Length: 80
Image 1: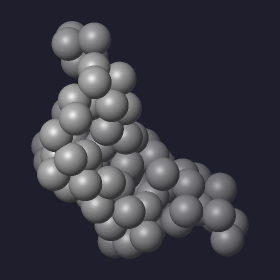
Image 2: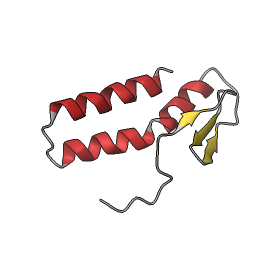
Image 3: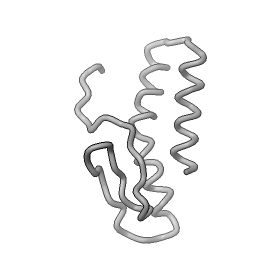
């Protein structure tokens, strides 16, 4: 589980509301413009943090502060 093969986060949504970007690259574009486009982009942008949260829980990390921090990051990205 330690080998990262995806573009490291954080990922965010560009000002167009449909392009997901990393600090040095773009990740994806939600091309079909619907009322779901931004919501889809938000979920995609949250993927690296979701993965880290899941790994933290799966490895039995009981450090509540870290879990709370990751959960707050997820909420921020998904609701941005």
